[in-house]
Image (cartoon, rainbow, N blue to C red; front, side, top):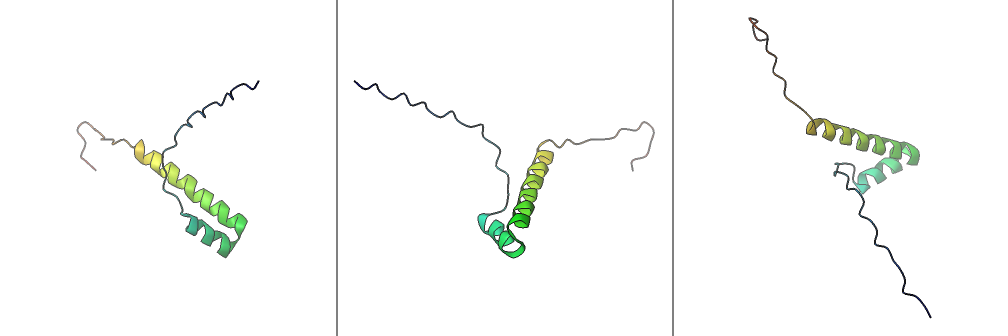
Length: 73
């Protein structure tokens, strides 16, 4: 007698916010023109920088300086 398989549903992964990055063709062009390792390194760096810029934009706050009796600069 066989028992029914007990397949678990995969738990949904935590969704990362979509960050603008390089397209496949841009990454491919980098690797073709400057080499696999350097192209991948530059593409990864651009991706990390884009994520950091997005985080800075998302958490940006406006600051208004208040100086008693002072002139605005």
